[in-house]
Length: 577
Image (cartoon, rainbow, N blue to C red):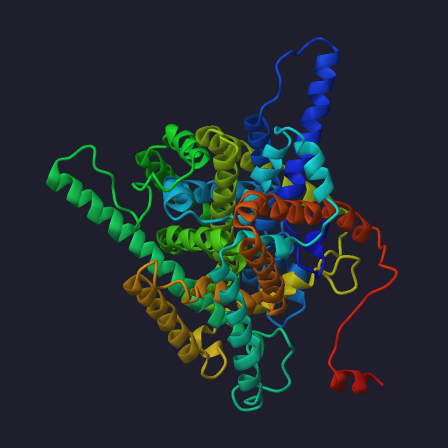
């Protein structure tokens, strides 16, 4: 929770939570065994279910927006602007409405994509690197010598290199191309228009300046790729159902994607067994759709009483579009291991905020809509990561879904209570003079303030660029599908190209380094690389993941590294002199 109040990116605790869950359970079981109360050995499914519950509970600490949109609604954030003259523009946190808000919204994301687990995991075979690493890690403790192997790999600390080894080569190349496009081409070109397209006096992270161009272009690429694949899956599913009804053949499988699940002979025995176990427990479609509609109805009835600015028809529109955004986020996370929920939330800030208008509480309406979208999309991508872990550990999807629901319910109570302790202990929380200034909260409030102005608030030419890149993403996907799988291996993936627009281009180098390591290894000994490549990548991710916890503890107590290394160009070095 304390990390939410800082300025640096918050690391993922997926791997760390699975490791800690494993050790806590092992200690408990050892204690019970010594007391003579337990004789049965622990299983990988039990560890997977516990990890899922812990991950769901801790995930609320981040998607709950305690350092972003939720605290951005407060009076402290509003006081730092000129718009705090009316209570329509701020809402201070209280424990009651925070818990109610989370309970109403946090479960919708689970129901929005649960019926797509076969498509994502089995048919599309998305990687979900964190879920894959966690699955391999849990399996390693149940294999002969697995614990020693996992301990050996803890010496590494290169998560992104490990992710690069897990992702297909084309994904890593797409990262690199996206970095070149964003930082090597667009950024210099747009900077030449400083003072013309946007004011030269803006702060570096202002959405009305250069940062706004990159963020909204990246969002347009995410939406173009995600929505294209969303409607492709829906259309092929409906076409398959229609063809099945016409043929009256109950044994025919629905053709979701080319060369998907019907081709079983290309799968190894392990993959066939995993697929069989994964599809054994069915979660009915009617259950997912009915659950989502019921939660949407509850949200429509309750949220306007919590947030008076968020009208019931805003909520209906949000829940109509939320499943497609959840699919986009889960689909992109499968390729890149990144959740783009905060960026989809920014999109909600601008659309709902502009719709409501400044005079009708558009600032708060935008922030509230941002929260709903962030929670739904984040839960969707996290659920698919957990399903990937369950697929690898032969765990029951139904058990994992129930565990996710329980963990989410725990997080809806625990995380607001922890935040409330900080909020009451630091009355100046969110102010510049506070121990916890929470600059992201002010950023979100100013973004919402900007959003009520509508499209006119975007920098000059930004909307045209967004439409262009949105269309380009769709065109690239059409080209990939037209050429077929065998001939489209060299065409980049827009979803992966969009990531450097948000996080910078340096990440592409690490991803490509991992891809290069695996490529050289495969050239020298393909069988060896295919067998041990996932284990090495898992070790890299787990090693860095295990360091996350002590690293955060050191940061919280103010310990700084004794030495830092930085690489800069010669012209920059001369300026330092």
